[in-house]
Image (tube, rainbow, N blue to C red; front, top):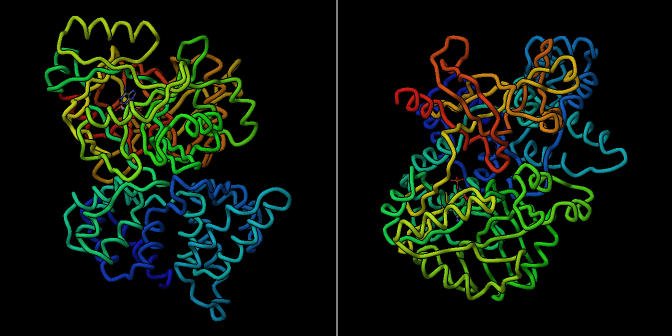
Length: 549
Ligand code: AMP
């Protein structure tokens, strides 16, 4: 398929902010594609060339793009000036390509495959001369592209496509294009977590194909989510046949085993197998079935007590010195669910049966590899005692689960309720920051927070936060944000939207100062939520509900 066809769609998508219109544009386009094209077009529409589960990343910094553009005929100063003005390297690239247009006669048309696979190639070179190799791949791609194509290729490479083709839009578009229900597409997606694959299945096998999607080892699924309860009494009532477990505050870990091979995935579907070698070893030895898909929470542990998630999260993105950091931050896993054992798929079994299977196949190693602590009672006094014990031992709260309920991937369906002592907080996205002054001159010291508009996928600013942080946290966040800086404007930097922070506040107010139309009074950092993707951050719609309340 010609890449220019896709560019026409990109243009149409950027001309509207309406969710419904975007859905129709995508549906109309994918309707007649064959299954091979679908598997390339869908990731290109999402601007997501690698799935979360893949270990590779594009990893191209703006700097390398700027260098490439100077090779295409502009001076570095010209490139930088234009970049400063527009804040969009895609547009800068387009402008340069327009000037060079005369050589277009000799060009062959770019295909979607070429773009997709060339960008994937960018992840390959490592070590010596890797930057040069990457530059050459980009140069070759851009030299054979039309100006408009150049813009979108550049944006895809730096992962800034921003067309708002979010999960909900893709789900609805696939449903509409192939005349199946949204629920069926969602069901298949929650198990496959790959829209390209879901589209292929529906194209080849229709509705039956979607219904027959099964759990598969090597493939992460979306976790079942908990609803919030105000108190234990309410949770006990709602859960009907309650089992109460400790809510551990760590990293949700999907463990998959096939004989000797182990996979570990996070809630964001990232593959973290390499980062936790000692956990892999424990799983190999102490999961007693040949095949298994299990869910648990991994905690960092020191002196028998859980350490803050912030600390543990240092291990999640670590690529080097893994053995060293494993010694510094020892872990413990607590298993709480079991979705597959050998040939048995257990999603539709009740939680009481799933827990029984879990107990059968886990050989506990005290303090390291264990089952989530659980009690079964409807007696409020006993539950209160258990809850207080959980808090005293440094855990987050409790989960109250319905023993009769099946497992629903990706959904908040009222099969489990969380109870924890915290005030209302918001999960917001860091989209910018300001450099500090005086003692804090080398750190980013104030963070611009944004919410997601569910309708359009846009991120809208809602406030600035500079409190609730120790020096160490400032330093850590600065290190995390620096590689994500998109552009600078005097003292302010704009940040690629990747980091979600749980934010406390006193009040939500209406405000003309921020694009969301709201502002937070006294926002303060509670903690980073590296376990959440930006699609899981709070929405403008929730802010409106809270404000009205
Ligand atoms: P939340 O993110 O607040 O909706 O809560 C759901 C998360 O709680 C899951 O993704 C798990 O990582 C975590 N969790 C901790 N302990 C448990 C438990 N005993 N049962 C289920 N989930 C748990």
